[in-house]
Length: 208
Image 1: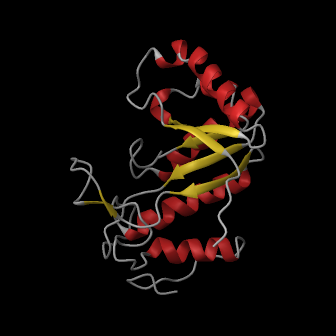
Image 2: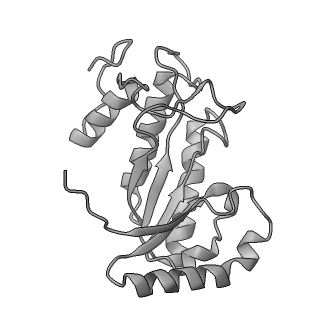
Image 3: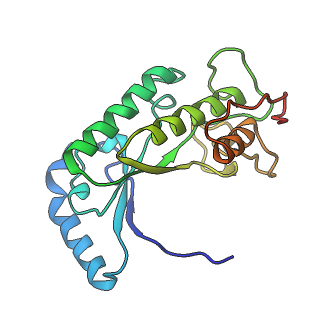
């Protein structure tokens, strides 16, 4: 009931379409934007959310106080290949940590899940894969010395524009649109309550 603004994010996923000129021409723009923001509020750190398509060599990182990255390896890239996805994620962590030496925060990560869908192998859109995806990312986040935390995308399913990658709703919520918990909600509860404990034994609807 007492929200606090602890930092300002000045952009979300610039260069999303993978424009080839973004990494080479945007530096002066970011310098101006960050300088103006610091003049308006010199008390809070500034950042922005980088998307993997924009290049890891994002000019905004040079003027950010800490680095935010949105990553979906294992979903949009290397789909259902969690081992490969975590290798790619760790590679990004290592590169950014050594190049910039600034705290890294994973501002988005997650996978779509259709409530009630399950599989005994890594299968996109199942509750099982979503829960395993989130757990794998969370373990990688906690294990890297340069990473300060992460934010699961998203709290609950919601309506969005029609797209071939969407099944009626945007389904990355750990709760359904009517706030019914998916398996991932229980997995997160366990991870956050006791990070060293083994995953709980969920039933078909995520019963702990």
